[in-house]
Structures are given as structure tokens and as C-alpha cells.
Image (tube, rainbow over all chains, first blue to last red; front, side):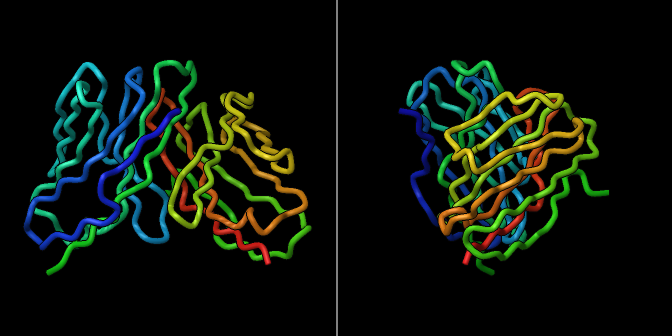
Length: 114
Length: 111
């Protein structure tokens, strides 16, 4: 079956530390992956994406790493700030679909302490 | 300048009623979606429309009927509401394949 999951449901970090949120996916045919951030009471917000022909992509304070060998995706947030507190979702699009269907993981809650 | 907007933000209703949620996007995107997020925060796609045509129709009860009057609007009508329909419903839109932008959500509570 299809599944996109996360290792940790909740991650607590101190302000200023780096955060790493992990995601495992099961469909080796997936060719596109996205990280979304969802703050309380709001809709998911696009953070960063990566295609399967890449293994790393950097944004502002965020880096996504893709390891296709073990079907693992991670989101690294540098110098975590209180405003980073949210639920983070990874999502994948399996190549077997000829539509733009996204399959979301179960989410990880990031808590940032002062 | 709201990119993807939904109304209402909160909807409380009795079992058996019929209700609608509206979605509008001003991004000029061709594709719009409806997602359901349950109490455990799990997000699952329900429908996808491209230029007013139904593209994705997941295993959703036929009490749910999307309607797209034009490519900037995708409404969701729900008949005979049930307790299990309580959730947060998100509308989203995209132009490029895959990059989807979400609305603020509609929290539906069925009593």
C-alpha cells in the first residue's frame, strides 16, 4: 500500500538549535516531494520541494535531503525560532499517477522552547 | 491579498442537514482541490478539478459533491451530514504540477 510516515510525532527543540524532521515513504516510484508547515488554525504552507533526481535542496534556513536508497526524506531547519513551531508534513507524488495527487504523511509537531 | 479563500471559516450544524463550503482563488491557477483533515491532523485529498473538469475523485461518499462554476471557484456541497463528517476541510489550488497552495480551512462540526 501507499504510505508516507514520520518517525517522531513531536519534536521539542531549544530556540537557536537546529531541527531535523524525518519522513519515510514507501513508494519508490515517487518523483516529487514537498514539505509543508501548518500553524495552528491555518492551512498548510509550502516550505520547500525536491525532485527525485536531486538529493539535496536548500532554501532560506531550510534544507531538504532525499535518500532514495532507503526512501527517506528529511527537513532541516537551522537556528530554529519560536515562529517555526508548527506541524510539519511531508508529501509525495507517485509517478504511477498521471495526475497531481499528493499523498501526505502523518505530520510532526515541532515545539520550540526559549 | 488572499490567494486562496474559503467561507465560512467555522460551520456548526445538525446531523442530516445539507451545507456548502465555498472556495475561491485569485492566483489564476487551473487546478483546485478539496482536502479533509481529521482530528489527528491527517490530510487526505477528496477531489481535484482542472479547468472545471473533475480529475481526481477519491473514495468519498456521494453525499459530497464538488461544483466548479469557473476555474477560480470550487465549492463543496455536503448532503445529509453525519457525525463523521466533522473535520477541517481545506481548499487548495495549483498551476504547476504538484505545488499546491492551501486556503485557511473550514472547521465543520456536526452535532
